[in-house]
Amino acid sequence: MKKKLYIEGMSCDHCVKHVKDALSEIPGISSVEVDLKNKYAVVASTTEISDDALKNAVVEEAGYDLIKIENL
Image (cartoon, rainbow, N blue to C red):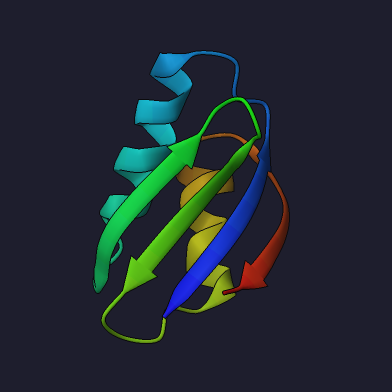
C-alpha cells in the first residue's frame, strides 16, 4: 500500500524529520519519503494503514496540517 499525504506547515529540514519520524512510528510502515518543496509525504506499508492513523501522526504527533490523502 502507498499513500500520498499533502501536508501544510512544514518549512525546514527539521519539519521534514519530525513528520518522517512520526509517520515511521506507525506499525506496518516500511518507508516514508517527505518532499518539503512540494509539501507532501509518501508512505509505503506492508499492511493497510487507516487514514485516521496517518492523520493522527501528522496532526497530533508532528503538529502539522494534513490537507488530503491520496491512494497511489
